[in-house]
Each structure stands twice: as C-alpha cells, then as structure tokens.
Length: 258
Image (cartoon, rainbow, N blue to C red; front, side, top):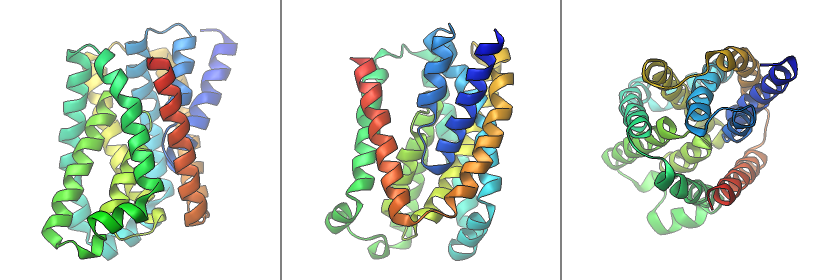
C-alpha cells in the first residue's frame, strides 16, 4: 500500500466515521475506497466492518451524556436488555455473509435502505396509521424494540452500510424520544454490532489487516467528532441530514447492484 493509498484511506475512514455518528451510511465512503485499492468485494466488506468498528465505540463516548439521560428516562435495565438482542442479530448476519453468496442480498439492500429512509422521512404520517409510541403498551413497545434491534443488527453483520439510517428510522417509530436521544441509542447498538463483527470476521473472514490498521485510528477521531457535533444539531436539521444520506446511499447501491 503506497503513501497515497494510506492518505486516501485515512481521509475516508475519518469522514465515514463522522457520518456514521451523525446519521449512518459512512460505509458508502470506505467500502468503495477499499475496492478501489484492489480488495475483492467480500474482503473489502469484511475489512471495512473491522476498520470502522472503533469509530462506533468513539461515537458512544461522544454521546455518553445523551445515553445517560436516556437511561434515566427509560431505565438502564431496558437499554441493557437490547445488548443480547444486538449480539445475536449481528452474529446471524455475519454467518449469513460468510455462508451464502451475496448477490441476492446485494439486490435487496438498496430497497431496505430506501425503505428505512422513507420511514423516517414520513414518520409522522406512518405514526398516524400505526399509532404513536405512547399509544403502545409497554409489552408491545418492548417487543417491537427488540425486533427492530435484531433485524437492524443482522443487517449490520451482513453488510452494514446505512445501518445507522435503518436503526434510527426503526427506533424513532417505537420510541417517543427526540432524534438526538434516538441517535445516541443507535450509536450504542452500532458499537455492540461492530464489536461482534470484529470477533466473527477476525476469526473467519478474509481480512486485510494493513487496511484495518490504517482505518481504525481515523474512525476513532471521526466518530468522536461526529458524536460531539450531533449534540449541537437541531432535530429538523438532523432528520434532513439522515434522510439525505440514506437516499444517496440507497440510490448509489441500487445503481451499483443493477
């Protein structure tokens, strides 16, 4: 890997992790960069998952105050109960990636991302149809929350691009909280999912460890900075940012798949 390759990979890692902390979709930056550097798609996907994982952890550190506030509002036990669900979902996604050809899911992924983006963009209208989170019973809300975390984490284990967009869209439908708190919870779930992919792919995946070594420190810096910026954005601007990123990610991946 040349110095120019290292420079562009560092830049891509920083930018991607900052975007992941704010809204999700940062893998659209790092994944194509790794492919452009000569890695096969599966190896690029696995390497990207490991490389951006430290950025998720840094995002949690950056949004720790919002997470603490949310834990006080919702109950620490409720949030901690989501961790095993995320671990199991991510492990299932990693197993799916390593055991099956990716062409079928590659065609489905863009539609999942665009659907999640649309769900966030038209959240109020959807709530009018399915009901506001405050109208759900505690049991219904808990079941929906675990189902969404499991599906989102499984997607993150398989591919991961726009994981944040999908998590925010789903969590915002079942949690009566501002996007600032929803995004902080999204960062925590993404971090758990990222740690699981590190273990799974480090043991079983075709990882390019040199690329991971370059990406990791850049994603830590970008993830922390992105999470700090998150606390200063208005809900309307944050929603617009997430919808824009999700639409771009979905369209680009759709064009690539076709």
